[in-house]
Length: 284
Length: 284
Image 1 (cartoon, rainbow over the protein chains, first blue to last red):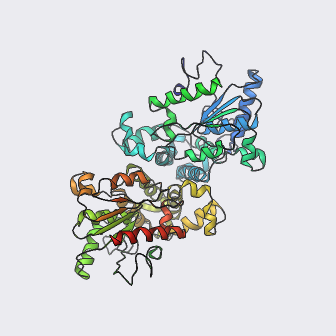
Image 2: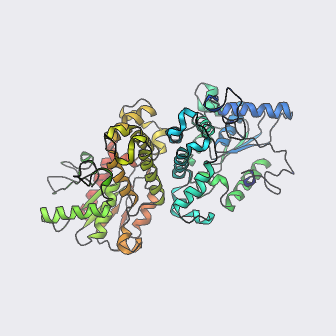
């Protein structure tokens, strides 16, 4: 995934910048239900929030690397939520921020969607309250979960135009199985639920007693708010509304017919837009 | 539901017109899996299509009532699909047509959505391949099915603005349970699946070997294509594209922040727009 965003000659150029890429808690690579030590493993894994991610990242940067200032915090989807959390929680440390295809406060629509993906997994009898024998045992729930991502993760236009053909899939069903089920099936059900719950509860206004405007006013970073124009989870108007609450933020929508999962960099024009925006932001 | 569209002084005025309101096959009121005589009951109920509805309606109108000409065919959602089917299948009989919030050909997005609502029901262990003891036994599947309607049935804006408060609900969860679960739970699972499958396979181009343009060219009715501007199932651009294939059709989007389920007439301005459009169409 980092190849979509980082590379020599790109805006995020590792020859030019010290780039730290972190996986979020519960992602399956970072500390997660499936790899946590006893007794905190599986469904006993604590409910973690975006703030927990960012506090852990802050410790990593300050204590391990001795970093005191960040030229740019950038991330997509839940990475955007972390970006907002960084800019609100540690305003003095973040010089620039680029939240891509995500919001600072989860909307009711996205809360309901994440509820349905959680239910898709937990309704599988093999789920057994999270004490399944093997992750793969919950495959029917995982497949249902994957299909729900297909309904909202891609734009109606992407599906109408059969853009799956560009990726080598022969039909909608082939695409849903070969792309979405293939992507989600190797994942651990408890890990996925940890992430979905975290998305569901993301809200920078936890710092200001529920006042979103007050939370976003705290930001001193230069911010480019970068929604994807066809995103059905984070429609540009939701992101624009938040951008208007951030001092001097610029609203920079990206074009991708794919919708939210355009984040995967499924077309060359996506990376070009990312580079153009981030180069401009980094030059400010 | 007919109260939203029909009444004295309204465009559809029963004092002025002979108005026939039909329920679709599988709806639970018309012939449906739960009330079909043996051996065609339950999951043995045949797969019916929009064309079967319209052929049955045609028989009703011509054989029972002796009607040879229709001043207007109008319907919302799957009713819009039937409206298109009427205008394509019996072009000489339909003088005017007003498909509201629906398409003549189901889009890949909607096909995938209807797949997920079918799976929500059939994945309930109580489903038992459709041979459940009582409809209510499948309540967990029915509740999941209801929640999926919440994600796409209402616009992201409606949920953001907490428009459920206008209907007397106190929270998103209260709304999902009190409105959506309450609406769908009394229904029969096989009935719902019959309808979902029918939606999924709606396609007037079955008359023309898959050529949608050729099918819509057959229409001789005056047509107002009336999507709902915030509809996430049938976005206006999908409806506009079809409108452009219909000779002399007019594109008349309706405003409703509710999105697709604005069809329920959840705000007074909706019925006003319906009347204005249909009055104009009926005057042509």
